[in-house]
Image (tube, rainbow, N blue to C red; front, side):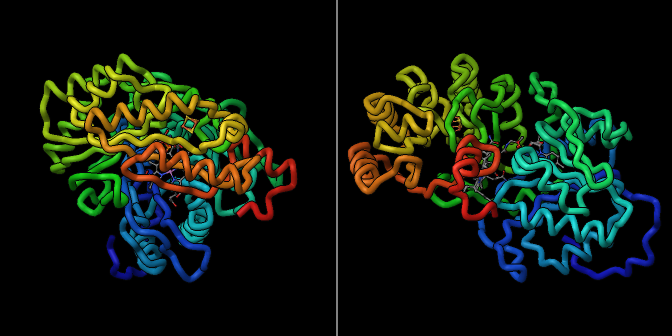
Length: 408
Ligand code: B12
Ligand code: SF4
């Protein structure tokens, strides 16, 4: 990131780029602390939107404020050096405060620039986003085609899945975009981010440099705590994903991929084809993936291992049957136990995640989860406190029942 200060007044009024896409920092609540947590992976949503915009002939830049660990002053200076026509900001619930702040700084420096937000938080709470006057448009759903339409100058009043202000009123255009054929998308614009600066969280990788990828989007699961519940499941073709891995290896020396698909094995045929191709190409790239214990069997485990997978992560959540029912993830505990045994027997390292504090939780059910975790004996066990995120069934329930003490 350019840290030299430039005088704003020298700037031409003609936009010098079409779109600036910003990944906000993982800021803490403290207004004075811009950065909270460390560890960073490329923002795949923005990379995909940028790739589509470039394919359409637009000039695009990405500012990943998280990986750059930029101070607010550095961000202001960089922004003063660029004159974008449109700024797009990504928003998860955990980055919403920072994203709102980024939007205000953008408007302060470039008052005529159109500010667009998208991402899972914006999708869940568009009305709340529009309360920030620095935000002009909210995109719900997949962003590639919709952002492209905004860039092409199509009126936002006619684009599906956009929310905007009309006077003091929030207008929500019907529908939202879901890209059915993921193979039509341009490969993520990795060249627009500082690839050498990314590094994954501890415990998840074996080799560096490592990077995140997705083969599928969406999940048929119905879990009440999860933003992916009941989304539309789609997949990229296995051979295109393998080509992309070969490109990442050749261009950036990538030696490990972390697949962040909600359930990597859910489209069995494509997953097996991916494993076969990885074995055949022998790229020397290892990988990890998230799997549901009821979407895993001997054939899959063996194929994954042979294809270079070294770790699988299972979301076990609870050792209490009633809680598993309550959160709408009623996977048979015997099935979970045998899936974990099978993975270990095949030589795959097992990460298992658990939750405390789901509806119906008691001291006894927490103990049952701890006992169950010990019995399952994964290589790594992670315990999290349930958080009702906006956009989930659990959030709606907690709000309705008056259980939310804060919506921050
Ligand atoms: C990878 C990932 C991570 C990585 C982030 C690395 C990175 N740079 O991507 C890591 C492991 C670090 C992570 C951490 C966390 N994560 Co996470 N993560 C994911 C995951 C699995 C994939 C994200 C992804 O790449 N998707 C693929 C891309 C293509 O989709 P996308 O990002 O949504 O972008 C599309 C649209 O949203 C939209 N869009 C996005 N941004 C923008 C911007 C504009 C301008 C426009 C127009 C459109 C647009 O267009 C994009 C392309 O179609 C999602 C689940 C999921 N399946 O999406 C959870 C998810 C985003 N994570 C979640 C959570 C809860 C967390 C944590 C809070 C967990 C925790 N307790 O610590 C932390 C928060 C970290 C932080 N930032 O503070 C929740 C978010 C819920 C919410 N309401 O915000 C999700 C949705 C999981 C879930 N299913 O519930 N996460
Ligand atoms: S928790 Fe896992 S299985 Fe359940 S909806 Fe989310 S991604 Fe799907």
